[in-house]
Length: 272
Image (cartoon, rainbow, N blue to C red; front, side):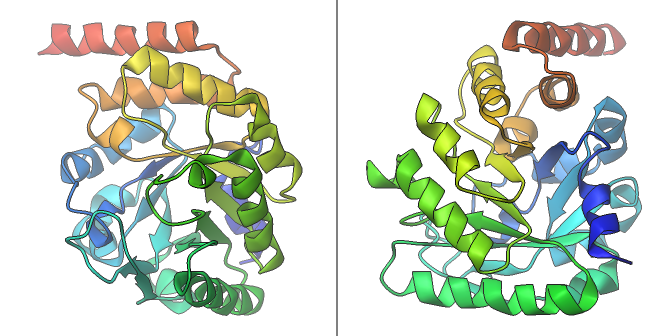
C-alpha cells in the first residue's frame, strides 16, 4: 500500500482528522479513562473519530475494538515511566511492527532544544523516515521543544515551536503533532511547516473553553487535533468526539460544538 493511501486512512476526505491519543500507557502514569475509552471506539467512530494513536500492547489486547478505527502505532516509550516529565524516550518498535498489526502510521516524540535528547530523538525520527520511504508508512513526529511538559516561556513560544516543527519536517516527518499556544502567533507554526499539523490535545479545562482552543487551532490552519485526556477523562467522551468532529470537519464554532456536546450528554442521561 502506498503512503498516500495510508495518509488518506488517517485523514478524512477533507484532509482533516480527529485523532484520539490512547497511547499514554508507555509514557505516563496518568492513564485514567484510556481503557474505558478504548472499549467505546466503535461509538467514537460513529460520532466522528478518524483515527487513534495506540500502543503495541493495546493493538493486541483490544484487537476487536480497534478493528473499527484507523490506528497509528506509538513506537517509542519513556525511559522512566514514573517521571511525568518524560525525561527520555527510546525506540522500542518500528514500521515493521506497525505493518504487523495493520496500523496506518507510526508516531514518535522529538525534543528539540534539549542537551542530549535532541540528537537521540531526531535520530529515531530519521530511522523511521528511512523505513517509511521503503514501506510507504506515514511518520508522525510529536515535536515538543525543550521537553515533554511546558516548563518555560520558550517551550510554549510559537517561534520555537515553529522552528522545531520545521526541523522534524526536514528530517522526514510526514505529519507534525505539536503544541499550539492559543495565541495569534501560532500561525507561524503552520506557515513554517510544509506538512499537515495536528494540534496537541490542549489544556484540561472546562469544556467550552477547550472547544474555543480547538476552534483557534483550526482557524489558524491546523489539519486536526490529537486529543488524549480531553477525550479519555471526559464525562461525555462520545459527545466530545462529536463536537470535535464539528469543529474540525464542519468549521463549527465553539458554541455550536458545545451545543452538540450537551445534546449527547442529555441523550446519555435519558438512556441511563
